[in-house]
Length: 280
Ligand code: A3P
Image 1 (tube, helix red, strand yellow):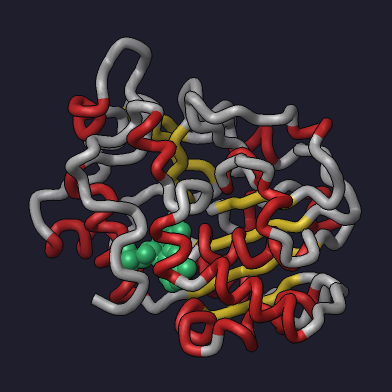
Image 2 (cartoon, rainbow, N blue to C red; image 1 turned 180 degrees about the vertical axis):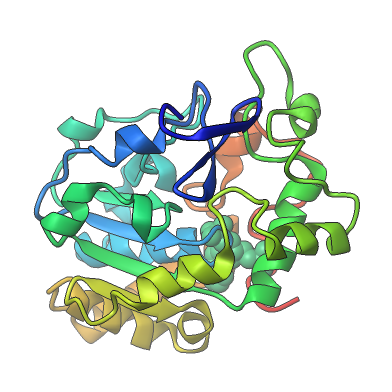
């Protein structure tokens, strides 16, 4: 990044945290100046903590539990990531998105867009236990890391892309060590969780646990609805549960990350992103 230290090709340290910065990933320094609207909603997580799960619940809560509101668009097209675009997905320009916009981010609190803090945008943070985050992350990067290759290279070469110097996937042990010693993108898991935890009484940050969502999905849906100021009937809560349980999301092309293989960004033989949905 412009304000960070270059570690490897495309990997920078900014405010003590590793970021990717390439043709698909924006400079986090620039994203700190992103224009926010008062009614923007941000789903924030350390990667592999249940981001997609929570995004989809949030979408349906804000769209009257109507699955047709997805209009054939995958979750990332409807709820794009702050500072990141997947090649092949069709995005409405961020400033033309309909309100309330929903964004996803893995940025730590310290590099969130300043206006999201100033305008007290609703932020839903989801935390998942460290062990499962390591296991889930390991399976994601083991075969093929997500970061797209420079133009012209295929999914099979993705593992040798820009993140390779950071993420060794020789073994679960080496991946664990990299997680434990802050060598992965988006920094230290514990700092990431703690920074958002400290905001939990600010009135605009809802701090949730993945494990609670899995155990009581209807309760989680109600909690998110209350936070977002939406009244839902029991039928609507049931409809959202039916659409966001693991099996349904795993098999639904609009929620299951199939666009990665479809867009040539991930080896079709790699472990699916919707892997187990529970502990290791
Ligand atoms: P596993 O790899 O342990 O299966 P993220 O969206 O942050 O990348 O998180 C991915 C993890 O959330 C994966 O965990 C995935 O299976 C799990 N997940 C996705 N949708 C889910 C759902 N509807 N219910 C429970 N877990 C879900």
